[in-house]
Image 1 (tube, helix red, strand yellow):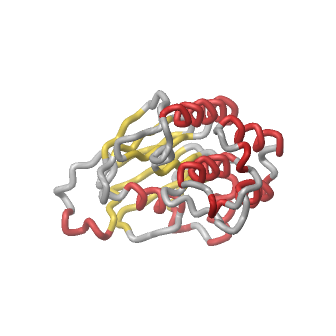
Image 2: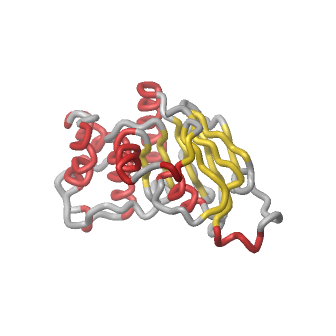
Image 3: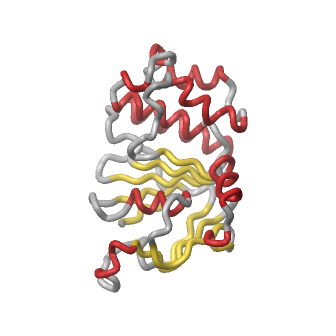
Length: 215
C-alpha cells in the first residue's frame, strides 16, 4: 500500500466544535505516503489515539472518509482488515496491549509466527540492544512500563508493514533508550521503506521527520 488519504475526518466527539478546530489533521485533506516519516504533535484529549484506531480500523466513530490507495476503508470486510493488520499496518498502542501472563518473547512471537517476518536471532539481538535482553523469558506483567514499551516496539516490527503507527512510543523511556529505538527504526525504514507515523504529547522519538502535523 502506498497512500492513506484522510478526507475531512472528524471524531464524533468533536462534532460540537465542527468548523472551529485548529488542526492539521481534522477536517483537512491529508495524504500519508509510504516511505515518509510523520510526527503528530498533540495535547492530551485531542484525539491522537483515536486517529491511530481509525487508521487501523478498530473504530469508526468519525465523519469523513479514510481511503487506502483510493479505496474507502468502509468497503473492507473483516477478512480484509485482518489481512491488512497482518502484513500492511502495524500499530504500537499507547496502552501497549501486551499479554501480562506471557513472557516478553512469547508476546513478540504471537505476532511473528503469523508471517515469520523476523528470525529469532534478530529478536534476541534487538532485546539486547534495547537493554532488556535478560527479560526475554520474564513475564510481561512483572516488568516496568518502560520495559514493556520496548517489548511492544519489538513486537510492532515483527511483521511486514507498509505503514507503522507508533502511539507515544518513548513516553516512559530515558533518552539513551529512545535513541537506540530510533536507530533500530531507521534501520527498518532503510530495509523496507514503510511510512512511520509517530504521535507525541511532548516527548517524541528522535528521528528526522519529513512532516510535523499538529492535531
